[in-house]
Length: 322
Image (cartoon, rainbow, N blue to C red; front, side, top):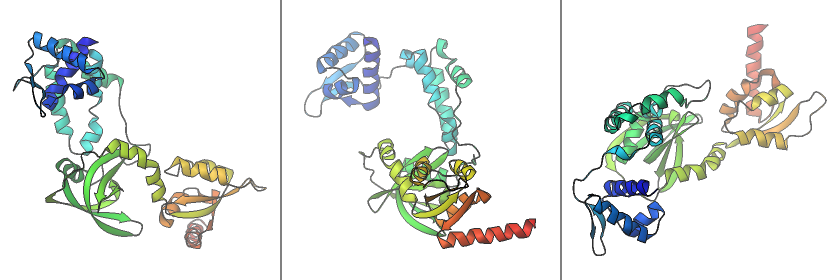
């Protein structure tokens, strides 16, 4: 355990330049006294670590000192090659960078661990998109990824409902969820989320923005994912579903809670086994395309606009198949 901690301490100093004993103790989850002892042990082993005194002081490595990756265990080396995510990285235009980084890491590994990428690739494969989804990345994903890396303000054109809107966005990060890419950014101080496949245009200028370093992308996404889905569901429709239609509906809605809430609130089945329920939807247009997949297993009761669309579709079906 101590050998592993010494390596971690060394890599922390190598990565961050300077750290106080308190900062190191928090990172390593030990006492400051243990940090003092570990620093002495590294120094005795020939590692050029020294302490700066004063308010801005801390432990540092002598300029230019670097360690090789000889401290990696087999499990660590194999996990490292699992973390590359070549599919999503390629979608963002980073496939070459990931491949180059893996080659450099591979060259630094001791001979006994050189088979780590092959072992990981033979045993694990990450297939991110859901079934029956388009696997090609969204057209503007690469441009947005570059803007995210460079902290550049973007002029975003976005398809919403029947129209298109423009937004001036500070792009904070990209999230891949169930095969769908989302952009998290700030607009006039508010944090908002956009589906990248609905972006119709991106202009990246020379203007940079000052990133809030306290912003936690993973934490924000975890807190907002559920509420984000609910904010997308701005409309509501009333439908009557056959037993078959009710079962199939589960596979048509994007959010599982939508189906669960409909089932929980639906009334008792009628004499034919059909139930009536209210379904939150993104828009009437989206509801039309989703529910049309149920065919004669669903009857739209409300709103009249959606019912008219189904009446028109039924008439066209009849004309085709009469």
